[in-house]
Amino acid sequence: MAGRRTNVVAAKQQPLIQPPQRSSAAQGAVQMRIKNSQSPGDRLSQSKSMVLQESDLPQKPISRHRRNQSQHNVVIAGAAVELKGEQLNVAKISESGKKQRKNWTSMWTVLTSDQLLFYKDKQQETGQKSGGKTDVVQLGGALIEWTTEKSSRKNVFQITTNTGSEYLLQVENHSTASKWHDAIKRAIDSSTKADGGFSLRRSNSTEYLPRHSSLPGYGSASPNTKQRNPAHRRSINMFGSSKLKHSTSDSADKNGVKNRLKKFIIRRPSMKTLQEKGLIKDRVFGCHLSTLCEREGTTVPKFVKICLDAVDKRGLQVDGIYRVSGNLATIQKLRFIVDQEEELDLDHSQWEDIHVITGALKMFFRELPEPLFPFRFFQPLVEAVKIKETKHKIQAVKKLIQDLPKPNHDTMKLLFSHLHRVLGYSRKNLMSTQGIGIVFGPTLMWPELDAGNMAVNMVYQNQIVEFILIESQEIFNLDRK
Image (cartoon, rainbow, N blue to C red; front, side):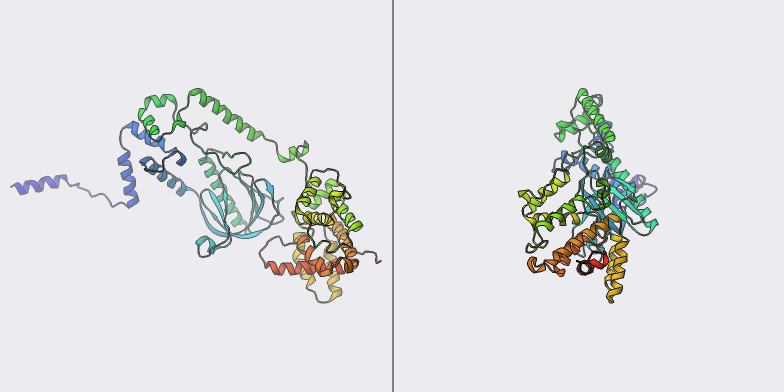
């Protein structure tokens, strides 16, 4: 009888319906709910502690609040849109507000919930291939837009980060470009919203200010809530976070600062407005050739003219002219004066080293956003210089140069007529056509997309400049002297 009674009692304690088997993740979630199902004050304490930043938490021991926070972040990351790797053409045109030369490069691109990763190839992403630099673009607070002004290519869109860096992305297929544009836009909106609408950055620094309670809108509960929930106060004090204790007046002051900062960011003047008011002057180095000539009202930049005149006057017979490098510090000083539109007298004693002038001239051509030989002329010129018959080669190259924009054509004509005079003193300056081609080949032309063999491109660059120099009288219709 005692045995039957024990079995009956045990049967009553067994559930009639067996619950379905849960995965380990689901069991963990159930355990978290059981642990959190305490008093209302404790639940509020734990939910409030989830907004604490990792910088405010002690490294050890790891508390339940830290675990709650990490699980919450995993859910958010899982809900974000991510794109697996795909080959896109990428050009970085600005680094923290400083312009860079636009070089298109084919990159293996991966989109995560808040970052855009650029790898040299797929093997680098999977770890099969070591080495190479991975470019990481933080999408929080960034802007994305389609653009037709920054490149002649189709399906180009631009990403501007909140640190001032600018990237151009392009792919030939329009649907693929739209897919990436929309996915990146959703990731930007999601990460920006998660960061509170915008990111704060220290002046002249890439260091972000932590979003803890010392910033308005990221603090603890109001004073009334603190009084009603002493458990919340105890939970905060457990981490030693005295930053979360603000008076009502402090919060009001900081909210005012936050609002004024938002208004300033919204109302800040554009670059064009600052240029129109004369606060920011247009520079000479790094400016598009057509824009510079239009601003100066000429077809050849004034700086190029005065440099060539100075070399014609006192540098044609100098040993290694254009091959020998000048002092870089003095070249940068000359560049600064030119960019500030100050009066420039190259006959002054501080510019007595002719190699400084030739170095500045080469730097001017190298820093053009688009080279003197425009990108679209690079491959046709390569094909033209491959022609074996000299007469047909001259005609092909001459036709291409005649099709150049007016500023490019006139600047090129003036430069090559000058280099032809340099070549006339080759016995004294020891500069041959090959030497001039090696110096000016990579300076005057380069491909828009560095996808080919750089060594092969350099060979053709040198050959093109060398051929134009030899046949300059026929190509530019120069007077024979």
